Image (cartoon, rainbow, N blue to C red; front, side, top):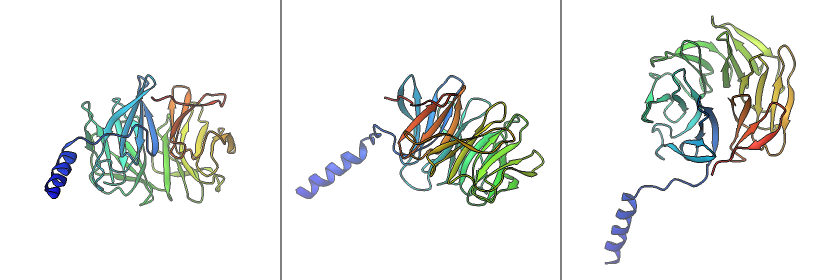
Length: 273
């Protein structure tokens, strides 16, 4: 009898929907829609949250089963049509969420670990592949990736107004720029950063870089040298980086938070009840 009761309880438990955690687990990346909606990639949820009006809710919850879509989501970006893109190392794929919130695969194989995704003026996807040390170009509608350039251990990328691809890496020179023809140019010589993750550019091409080990966001003026811009508390291990209008959003998995930094360097945690 006891065995039968236990089996029945297990059956009921498996039939009930799994309750999502009340808090983020290990956020890595963020993207902001035109309306101001913040999407946050949570590696350990696994899945994607959305934050709007100070409230956080689930946008997409992935399966806990490895090698299923977005089981290891690592990066987010908004495409030219306002749709969310996500890179996933579990399936070695980049997904576009349709208007119903369903993730659709875009790359037909060939990508190793997609650490960062950006979109150029044509709508093409540029993907930083940490495993294969490549920057890939994927057609806007999806298709076989085409190699743009080789970069040692690329982690983050950003596209400027001329469609040049800026890459932060763990290579010999930690910030490089790739022209539309595929030529790799050095922006920052050597290795001034301890553990860089991502970078973005302002309209005047001032670059900002998150550095997890330094607990800092670095600033690189055009033609200048890197300088620490914001560092220390409340930042613990800043990783993700994106724009929210004139402010920067920094995603910190160790602090389990998203921070907003104003142009004058003031840091505040993004409220998300």
